[in-house]
Image 1: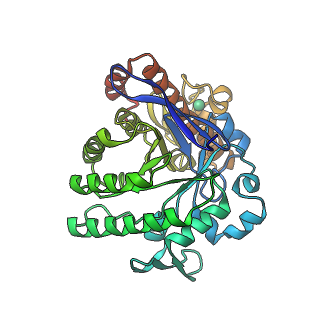
Image 2: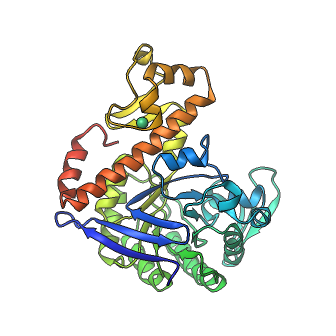
Length: 371
Ligand SMILES: [Zn+2]
């Protein structure tokens, strides 16, 4: 039997959106799915048990950060990332490309690779597609991402095309380097906001997609309408036989619009990052718990949520914790925000199974949740 297998469980007759089952060496994932981000081999402020209790089926971790600290060889010696961090469900690692281009101090990009300085101590490093795969092999996540160049929003067609060509060359090298059958390599479609480049990228990426394909370079500052338009262009050409992952997207409106456009997997730091600043995503829209209006509000954060936070605590208490900079505030809001997104995915799957996802989207667009 293959280590990875995807099958569609249901396609909504009203909208064409789908529910699927994705089998990995660390268990089955029901899609569409939201993946919380555990940058430094931890979903910030949460124990793996708390993450599991939110309904999360898979988490993402960052190759760049783990390469810097503690080093991928250390994680390998610990028995791999699952063992090191005590998470026994599926993990996806990115390739480090995004951080190399966005967080580190870039020195030079050539077809061979990228020279950069560490954001921590300024030390010099050189990433190649081969090294990115070697690091991801050491970390041992179930799903690993190809090393790519995600060009910035606003670059010219000419630059976007050269970045895309480089990404395709790098993809071949990633593909040739990767041999571990217990990990599946997801290639990444790039092409910036140019429709012709998106289709070219999709076409030339497909031969490398064995059981999963990703869409990168969206939600990088462009208006949402433009992002949806680019997704509409690609949608007819995705293979049915594998999951499609939209990288770095995690607001409620984008998740719903993404599922409508055939996306199966999403990740984003948004729910945990906003939680630490005291903002909750709820079925009644955004709640900024710091606001004075919640000082004596003894109702739960979200009356429609049954997470640990909503079951036991009030807005007034959460407001107090956040205002007093108590770490429990960050923990409880993180639990809630991830639970909210996993519940949202559950609601979408139910609507798809009922062949009513089109109605779901129409109603959602008019609700205060659409943000
Ligand atoms: Zn909750």
